[in-house]
Length: 316
Image (cartoon, rainbow, N blue to C red; front, side, top):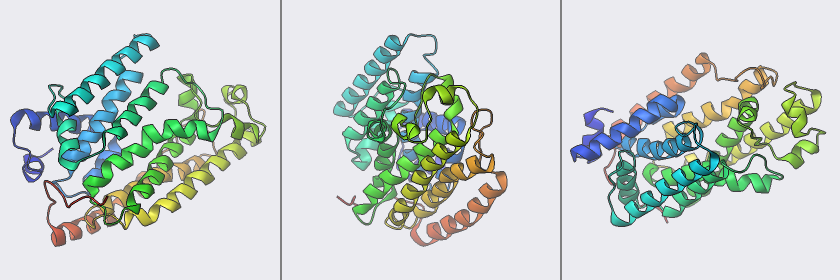
């Protein structure tokens, strides 16, 4: 992160700047597409989005990576302790944690509701105990906390011009997550998890045992097609919400929409072979999306400036 970004964001304290830089590093290392999309935002907004990513990534590492040698109960204890400290830090208005320091600052500057972070940590805890979801309603509790609230956290920073932007952000967050579930069926099985609703699989004659055989049958292909249709329906529902954001925020979210939801196009391109291949959006498509988005972002910054440290008054 350039010092200029931090300067424009009004972040001057050295320890706070270091915390925002730590969050930026987590974003750059683990969320490359997301990170590149943030470069389309005005510089003054980027640090805050990096902070939100840093929070989500660090919690995810507790569940899947950093704590890989611990039992599920030990991971749960660690996650609960970390979350309790975070909420205590929010109440007192500061944190000594090298990640949460920037997150607390972001939450307070943009008045982001605490319940979004509670829902997120609830979903991370679910990952420690829940390995499958009987229905879409059951899955939605997890998806809301793990994905929809990410969009809700970001909306104040993106400066909405209408309250409907919040509902549309939820739709887009859910679409992103469901696209990941379709792509990652094989990888999730390796972690002992299935994120496709069992009753919807059963409607196509597919069981968890069938997935574990790791062979794409006509029934599995049909079940994946059904999930892809839902992703596209949610994506389409989300599109009006992008126009309800500040013009300087729109190119970033539009690019993210096309690239993340494009994952399901990539699944179709590999003929649904999700057990032995990872569907990826092609470099050519990334460039086709990135270039016009970069031009639109540059024009918006010329018209509206590099961003504001405190933003406009959020739409209630």
